Image 1 (spheres, rainbow, N blue to C red):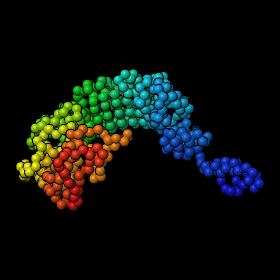
Image 2 (image 1 turned 45 degrees about the vertical axis):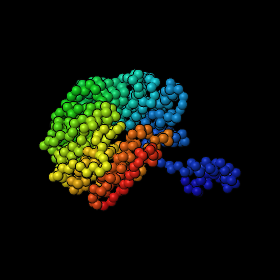
Image 3 (image 1 turned 180 degrees about the vertical axis):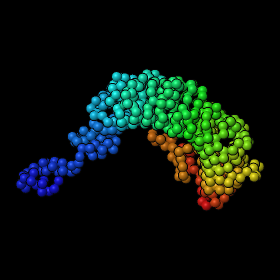
Image 4 (image 1 turned 30 degrees about the vertical axis):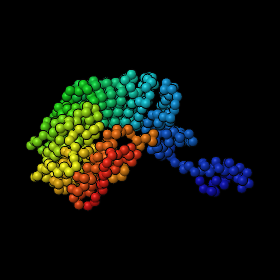
Length: 514
């Protein structure tokens, strides 16, 4: 507002001096731009839910915008209940009361509805939840995410599929359901992403939903134990990503979608989706309850000529990587994670050096990552003065540029594999060695294992000893073999939880730059 118009409303200078509070209130009012209501609605729709609610407390315009906020994320955090220490049953009543007040006063037009009740084990009254879904799921909604209570004793909520009928669910693009029962009777025309976690749904019900949702692009199933056979229709031309984990009853996946290019799956190789695999470009396989996944991937994987990225996570290995004529002609990224935490599946006779045959099978491989997480090293250790190192002359890896080994230990076969890469990867640019298995730690800076309580994650003395021994081995056997054109990066250990060192040895290492 202009100064002249403000002076007319305030009257004489004497009146202005006599009422400073009124002057302050008018200045506050004049600081709010006079914008059309739909513009204010759009501005507040961009705010997170808690900020939009605060704005609704200070202005009538903002209050109407808050009541039509299109993105509703209702959780313990957004409702500011995460710091409460009251009993869980009372906390559940407060949560229900607040959500119910928000939904009753909402004027409609919801685009995203995210209700997260998974931090509370108390059962939520289904009459309230059904009412909230009826308010939220209307034509125009794009995303629905529902997370129900955790725990085996939690009662499964029956998702009311009729709320999706009569055109209400035709605009939903993302549907995320956790810990509930879901029995759809029709497809969702705009559905592109479906995520089901611990959802009770039958295989034929899911197959019917997929075949009627022609825009489907991504499907993720986790712990859906009612599915025995999964069928993916040939009509899903846009379907490109499939993730299946911990579905214990699943026996077979029948894939007929022509453009499936990214698969993440746990279990044996035999569970891979059958059908057209010509478009497969990324494959992630995880099985922490069975060993020999790397061996089977080398010997049993079906032909996928266009595969570019392969990640294998296994519970250790019993058999060495076989020598086969099968090639991964377009594979550029290979990651192998070995973990003995579940079954202790590491065999003392397993030869890390045999992984060189896997590298041989990938003529255009550019990046190789090896992660080994083990409680103790069971393999033959390299000894001082050991010069009997195996070599594979003629096995040249022309395209490998980046190699990272996590959990580097003093096993002789691991040292031989590292030296083999340094000698035969003619395009190698960077080698990163980490004596700990830490998939989230990058760079050369010293790591910190300190958690929220100010304490490091627990580690056994043997693990700490092996980490220091691994660094000593790097200094003795690897450092001298690094060419001047290769950048060596050695990850430092945490200075707090790795203070225990074996008696009688010292190690020195450095980082080299080309």
